[in-house]
Length: 405
Image (tube, one colour):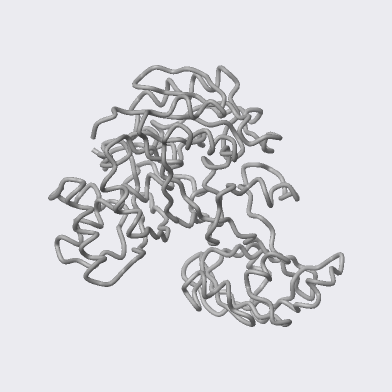
């Protein structure tokens, strides 16, 4: 059972030389490990259209990474890093990005011990004129544990989205061991990124090129999109011995009525592009059960999927969710999921998963183990032996289960 799972059972040796610190020159030139019902073979990501199951539906996450890292300086010269997590005032992403003078965001703050109170100015060592014109200030207006509430104020009439574009830095993962570079603005972003809000990329999608997408469509394989804004918690290692003691982060997502209907009507296999897409579509089953029980479907706690009785089949759960949307006049369903997918989890929708190779002892690796069982060891051993590139800018895999659910 999940309560007794030890994180130490999901460890492996990852040589630093196999962590990809930069992307390949061409997105779709990455390698592709294909795991198909126990068999493993090596391909190139450009071959993805040829190895996807016929009649598949690909579910991708259209979130867009924002340049969420901002550096500020105290009069004393101390540098304070503010890593924006999600909006607080206003809490709606679109409204927050559209503000033209002041916003409050939840954030992590580096070197906070050097910043006791008062406002601080944007760090601008090269005296960039655009940055200087904004006169961007930050002040701390509250705190919840290790999360701080930061008010940003600026001049010039630009939206907060434009302020971040001018002053912010792309929050590449800390395990890359380097500062963000100009190429990261484009490459740490999927080509179909649309809705701003993530502070980490849904990296499985980084391999897709216009060519690959065109070839997939030529095979009569369809795409559908959801939005799940990836939080900084995706980098948080599991530090507790037992998984039951780990506090999973929650993330906001939204799906359209058309998306839910497409998932409901899908007769072939469903392939999730990335762990974020898988977490979202698997969460929908439990939100549907909440709707059928008359509960407000606004938040799914991390272990609820293991405690909630499977009262409905997957289609009935989606029917309940669609009925809830209809009764409430919703064209878009928005909620937060904290779901933690670990071995013993029952996948309701996902037949295939496109994903990169993840860190040892991470919640992402646990999801892989939940999906293909102990064969995750065989896949990772093969990838290590064949010198695959690991983590965010690394190579890819296509993991396939049974075509039937």
